[in-house]
Image (cartoon, rainbow, N blue to C red; front, top):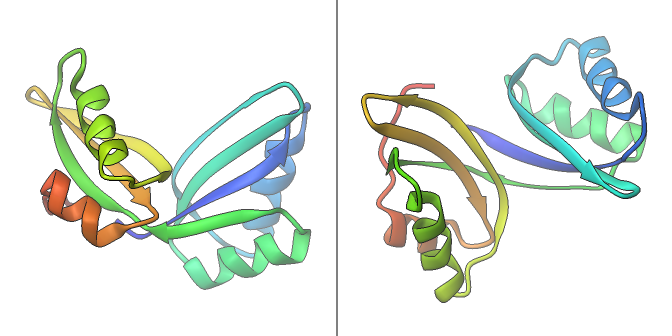
Length: 132
């Protein structure tokens, strides 16, 4: 997995379209994306094929963002597995910047997580190398 960008956008019709269009105009392909919002605040979590260009686009359109290198972990595909993994991070004082479920197969869920402590998260969650 590559760099994960967690982008703050306004929560109104067209805000995500504006962001996605800005990336497209610069030829930046989105590999993974999730988005949502509550009240006036929205967000997008994206991984692209070109981190430098994505970063430049975000800066040029003035959207606040944080970024980090994501690790991919395999979780058992069952209720509570994500809760257990995120509780382990919380207990260690590790904050989650972004989290994307990027696949599932044969009882396993592949989750890309970006934290404020990549080394600590790797030690706690034992990431696996999963083809992108």
